[in-house]
Amino acid sequence: MHNCVKIVLMLVLSYWCPDVFAKEFRGIIPLHSSRADVRRILGHPMFDEGSPIEIFDLPEGRTGVMYIIQSCHKGLPGNWGNWNVPVDTVVEISISVEKPFKFSKLKIPNKERLKWYTDDTLTTYYHDETIGIEYSVTKRGLVDEIVYGPTEQDHHLLCDPNAPKIKY
Image 1 (cartoon, one colour):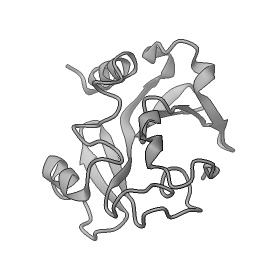
Image 2: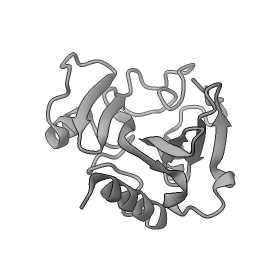
Image 3: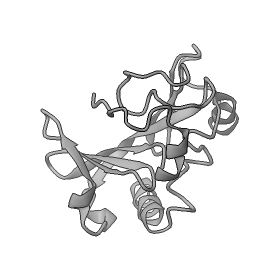
């Protein structure tokens, strides 16, 4: 099966069966998996520095795994801080899709309810906090990045549930 078709199928299934797919990527679950889990599943990153972000070249595309660098660390963009979990816990997995595809292929009903914001490059971010997935969609309507992050069920791990989410 062609890689693009596999990714689209995986994403469609993750939307319609969130309890099975959306909380994880290859068995890695944001806010529940550790750096050791990632290395056991994906192998060693491209640069073995032990930094807050590790990069892997995978068939789905270049993949960045971000880790908590300090529990309850506020003032960081996106999902980086404000979580009461141990250091080196996965907070986010971002995949720069190898072959971008039309957002419309995902068949997500009422996509506008997911819209988070549009940046200066006219990339629109569609975020479904319930299942912990975000799609970056170019002005041409192509999904070029998919981000797996915390789900609504993870909100009990927030240090400050009222802290604003900083966009970057």
